[in-house]
Image (cartoon, rainbow, N blue to C red; front, side, top):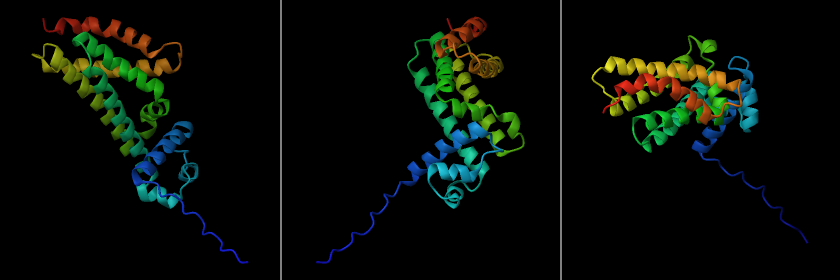
Length: 205
């Protein structure tokens, strides 16, 4: 009695968007672990479980893959900040919620934050421009927030304040990496204690 061999099971096709997300997540981890220069596309492809040509088909180059990682992180940070500010009650609470969203993001997305602070090693590349775009995004969000809640009769002062907030929080975030005991809530309170006193005089009465 002869038996008919079953054909090999066909591998389930992964949707392009899901595959791209997997590649970005793995690349983010590898770039954070090894740095952009040392990271290998072969290593990234192996960890994802795809061929290196497929990786290039999606992103064209290692720098293109890095850009995709930074862009994904920027979109996630923006969404988190906007969600937090949307439920705020007044100017002070809006600032507090926005700052807390940032500090929570860097605590929960350490690999993404690691990429964003590698700016000095990426000077002259498109990635450095993407990092500056991320910084500008956060500055624009804060400036918009201030214009909505505070006296915006002096737009230059509003912009300067927003730039100051973003720069100060970046440095504080780097410091927090070395001090695990400083939770996002505690970091937020430290930042508010320093920042709000200088902004409160602009608050609309």
